[in-house]
Picture 1 (cartoon, rainbow, N blue to C red):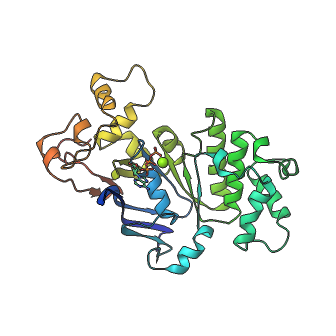
Picture 2 (tube, rainbow, N blue to C red):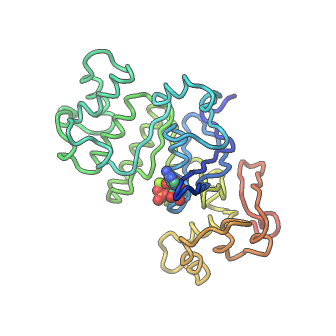
Picture 3 (cartoon, rainbow, N blue to C red):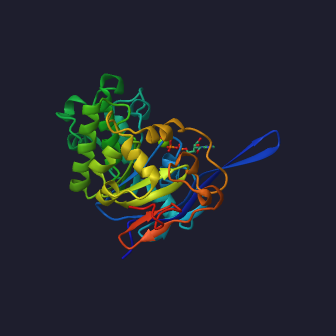
Length: 321
Ligand SMILES: Nc1ncnc2c1ncn2[C@@H]1O[C@H](COP(=O)(O)OP(=O)(O)OP(=O)(O)O)[C@@H](O)[C@H]1O
Ligand SMILES: [Mg+2]
């Protein structure tokens, strides 16, 4: 059976020119995963690891430079019709609901306009907009439909964004740090709303987050990214309970717990933001278990039968757990 979404060898190299010199930067390399209907995948990693770049390729905001993306088995690269109709298949929620809504328009217009553009509704969009506002918990919807974004709180704005996205009946929603601009309790409400809608509307979700805790709460599977690569991928509980990659272990141990942090983990956190080495494993300069081979030799992903994969020289050589 074809997956709803299949990603194979996906990569993105950005090219810039300064003083006639061409500079290339490989932001994302060799990403593989599948997404089934009703499934939640979390993409976790620190700032700059390439999470949003993947999301932008999945929604065709930028083209991939390597590999391909398949929706229901159709290649995004080769199928022009799929690219044209993609907004009715996959939609994205961005982290900043304040920037996502045009301040000059009412909520009714903001949610209703895409319905007209994508021909989801013929004629008056108001009844459908009211229905969508109800679905995202903006009730009574009549109290919200004629308001402007500045009259809403951050959490209410993010609900409007979700209503706008839902109107196009997508199969996949990609939420890029959807709660990072919100208070923790409001953020939890938004996460719960997304989970609820996933079940009711039969959606699949890709959640992008810095936080393994949110990923564990939401996701069936987790992909851990570092420096544009998939360090580890697998079913949520197995990955959290038995992490195989030193970076996943670092992420798990860096969640707030003043008693747990060891000197070694502090050292790894201190080196966050340092340039990634050119040769060998991109994580070796921060890895407490790194050996000579990690510095010199390119590492290949190892996939195991339990649906997990890990990008580490030490896996299977006593470095795994
Ligand atoms: N248009 C672009 N041109 C050149 N480099 C880019 C471009 N967009 C992103 N990058 C680079 O690609 C890398 C990955 O960026 P990306 O936005 O995907 O990271 P991220 O994991 O989403 O980070 P954050 O958690 O901060 O949102 C970064 O080093 C970034 O500077
Ligand atoms: Mg990002």
